[in-house]
Image (cartoon, rainbow, N blue to C red; front, side):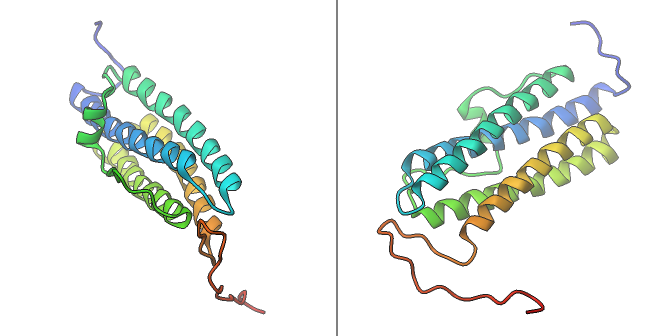
Length: 179
């Protein structure tokens, strides 16, 4: 391979590649969970959640491809096995766990928030430690997409629990500020 001369040292590029591979691994764990819940959700909000998660895993698919391509552009190789993903991901699987719809939404929301925290840290490291503003900008865009997905999930369950039987527990009422 020809020498890459983009203003970053080999050490800087490798540091960024390592961060990107962690982000790629988290994205794979998150897409697997999102698809699993997309398949398994039941209850009165089945259709809404089924469609929301389809939209989200389509975004995650595009992000996964962009992460892998960014890694290649920096001269690295993306992790490409489930064993590799699970080894470096910060997100964990929940094997055999099929929660109620509210639990599914909450778990995915928490996972997106973990990814957001990781991306925020990786943006800082790319900028301050590795001097790669291009990757910092790229990761900022991914972070904004995860912030929107997390918001959608939080908004979905705010104020109510969803049970597979269709029964909704007594709802707490909230009074908007200034009313």
